[in-house]
Every structure is written in C-alpha cells, then in structure tokens.
Image (cartoon, rainbow, N blue to C red; front, side, top):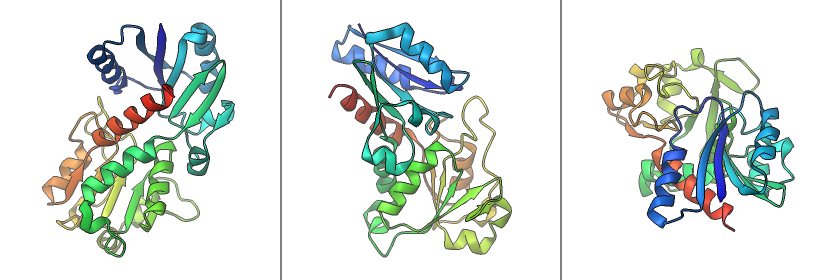
Length: 250
C-alpha cells in the first residue's frame, strides 16, 4: 500500500483527500490511500513518519507549516528554496525532499484571470498581496517572475509593508490586482473577508482568492458586486495537486 497525505492545522476545509481518492478510483489505483494528518505543531511530523514508515510516499503541506517544514527536510528544490516555502514533500528511503507547486498552480490561475492582454509585459496591473504567510511566498515569486509590481499588505505594521489602514482609494486605484493569501473566508468561517475598502473596487479590478472552499468567498462576492473580474483557488488547487502527483511518482 502506498500512502499519501496532507499535513496542516486545521484541515476540515481541505479537499485534497477527496480529490486524490477520486483520482485513485478513476485510475484503478487500489494500492493507494490518502490521509489527513492534523498536526498540533510541526514536531508532530516525526510521529507520522514513524507510524507509516516506508508506506508513506509523499504529502502536501498547508497552513501553517509551509515555512516551518523546510528545516526538517533532507533536500529542498532550488525553486522552493528561492520561494521560501514548501507545499509538497516526496518521501523515498527515509529521505524527505521539498518542492513548491503552489507557484505553478497560482500562475495558471493568474493567466486565466488576467487573460493574454493584461498578462503581457507593459499591460500588467500592479498588485496588492494580502497576507504574509507561506502561501504568499509563491505568489510573490510568480509576480516577480512575471514582472508584475506589487505591495504586501499585513495586519501588523512592518518594514516595506502596507497595513489595511493604508489602503486609500488612490492605492486601490493604482493596484488593480488583489490577491488574498490569507485563510479569511475559508469554510466554516465563510463570513470572514480581508478588511479592504471594497467600495473602491470597480470593473478594472481583478480579485484572486487562494481559498477554494467555499467556491465564492465573501471577498470574491464583494468583487463581483463591484464589477471586478474574479477567480477562486480551485484552478490553483487542481494544478498544484497534479504537479504533486507527478513529483511523488518520479
């Protein structure tokens, strides 16, 4: 039996188990199973590794361990190291190797949201990235790779950061791409949303929510109400999941 899984806290919102179980069934892979490993802290990963041994072939990493996992790995891909976060771990012979497939998934969704015209150099909108956690690392890396200027937004003041109080109408007008990398709005707390000035949104804005459960978050609903183009995290989720599967089987 080959075992795969996901580590994080909490995991009630995650659809990874359902996604991979459906994939196993459709492909006739009756020697595979997928488990949710809710860890109280990253140190508890050792217990998971000991319990499943050589059967464990790989796992996804989600909030809040995408950064913390890195020091516990035997190897990290160049891309993941440059990004500063890992969301995919391959296990082979007791060796743990980390990768970042969030970047691939995010870029696919970003190209879909902006379309060819707005993704072309010189026509890209500047971005506001809401949140500074592990998920934001891949977002920043993709934006930089694509030549898209951005500012980071955090609840806590810090060097180079904007706070939500800094989001004036002028800032909103000059940053038409807004990416939510926070867990706000994730099921079951579906009423949550980042405290941006939604009345400053218009038809020229693009809202990208990395949250995919529910499909329409309160953040995206506000965008739709004000005429903005929107996309949720499902495209990113599916594309990073497929890339994880490719890595686990390489």
